[in-house]
Length: 394
Ligand SMILES: [Zn+2]
Image (tube, rainbow, N blue to C red; front, side):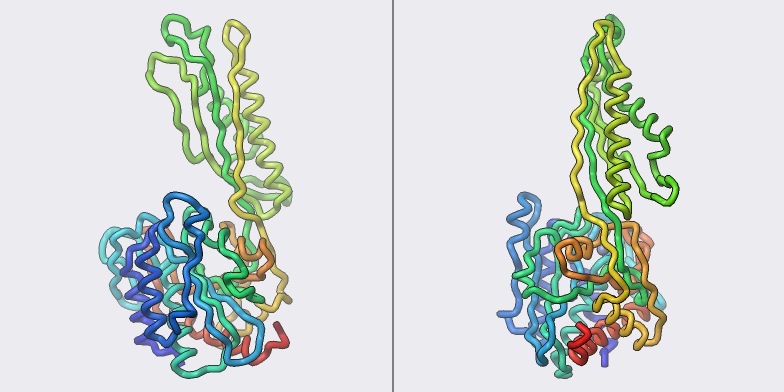
């Protein structure tokens, strides 16, 4: 039922549109045009005001397309983010064997245009073949790559309150992501005292020394990088350090940023506590000749929260049945990264994430496997048909 040539056309067209995080207007336009060509009414297509609520640096909102159902069944949602990482700027897609790759030294943007293209293909296939389907929301969020912002800001009422979601942002088309982890970003702002480093260093307090001691302490306690404490696991990272103005001046300000992740919200709290305690300890351990200490301002922002769906959850069951129907063995898994689905699940919309044939995300080696992409299109069609046929299971 999926027309391969059309599916490939949508993929190649959407890969060629530039749309880094915060600048998704052209992508939204390209998708809207394709959906209107496919038979969508203009009134079904809207963008929300997520960008306005996010503030500066975001030019357009989430693209939301609401297809009326042809059968009475609970509304389902498909989603795929429109933005790509900066590495994909200027990408020119080309077909090489059974893959789509970037012609130049850029990323491809299959993450997540392969998901967007698969949704356009699904919508076109449903409308042009008059296939019975439930009410469907197609959501194309903005700004996934720098913190899942679009999906965090979207309002369920704007989505028509779907009963379940199928997010497309993965690799192999038999993968069903049923869980993902919690993540936080932290900032440590260390204040010392600046003096001349040659004339009276003893009167100064080096923020750089405090930062070094704190990070060394965290590593000694076994809380840096991959963390394994019995059955509890997580990760942590120091991402940036900045500070100091001159080599002959004791550093009076040092700002460090990083992140921590875990599948267990309780263990994530523990990791954050070790970080904070270590910075406090390091601050106390560095004094000048007056007995003075530096100061620390510690802050944590929660990026997203962990979730784990039960295998009996309707969206998990329907996705697994659709993968099986299309001839593959379903592979339910839990991811070590955040997804738009984290936000949907957190707010009470059970959502699995499926792959659309994209691989090597965020690298110049990124590619889309054509066979896998087309397979994913068939899986989506089967999900839509299945959700219309057996509303009772939802
Ligand atoms: Zn993605």
